[in-house]
Amino acid sequence: MDLEILKTIGLKKYYGSGAGLVKALDGIDLSIEEGEFAAVVGSSGSGKSTLLHMLGGLDYPTEGRVIVDGKDISSLKDTELTIFRRRNIGFIFQNYNLVPVLNVYENVVLPLELDGEKPDREFVREVMEILGIYERRMSMPNQLSGGQQQRVAIARALASKPAIVLADEPTGNLDSRNSKEVVGLLKVTGEQFGQTIVMITHNEALAQLCSRVIRIEDGRIWKDRANAEKSVRRMAAGNLTATGILPEMATKPGRQGRGQE
Ligand code: ADP
Ligand code: MG
Image 1: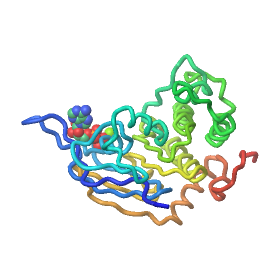
Image 2: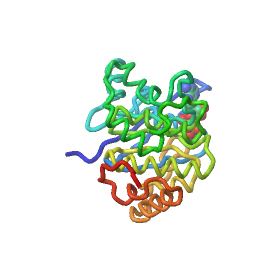
Image 3: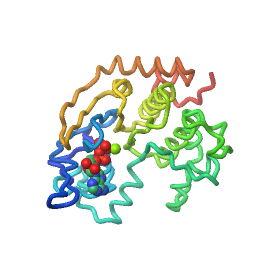
């Protein structure tokens, strides 16, 4: 089995032309292994979102290749790319983009239903329980806090069982306590469901919770550093304990529990 799940080779993305040419990505060579929780940091306009879009097949590169689980997605046709995306990638954005007239559960399963797929109800329930929103499944989005709304958006991204989760500033609208909680939860769900996560963040403290920090400037990788896994686990566990969210899950990632404590 190939452990390398995400790879870019000489990836470039240019916008505009002539005097208006913007080199949003200017030669990115990146390799991410299965199960990693990588943070992408860098100043505003450095190319972070563009990179995430390329990794998730939301747009085509100008040059170079994006290889996901051994498959070169940069050569896929539009409809193939859409199908690939639906099956493999879960996106989480800064704005939760919940449908206001649908309740929490309906929001979570909406993308699956739009795809004509039957949600795995047991799985969706497990995801919602881990995220602490199952009791709120009948609530409407406007009855929830920002942190709760983002957890609903996370559940929606995970409902299709994606192998890869791409998050663009998922904590951008949250206070620091909720931000740590959301990142801790992503770490727990990532371990529970064996996902690879790439998360853009402005927040250095949050980046340190990840197993790796990739720093981008001017469309190029500036630094790429692994965090010690031991401390990552300890910090994630500490956050979850401090916030009272399923402390047992953080130390027993393989457990299929329901968080009864
Ligand atoms: P970041 O997410 O790091 O803030 P982006 O990836 O959004 O940066 O943008 C990188 C650069 O590409 C910026 O200069 C931005 O203005 C430009 N850019 C991004 N998207 C587009 C687009 N659709 N059209 C033209 N320029 C774009
Ligand atoms: Mg951005």
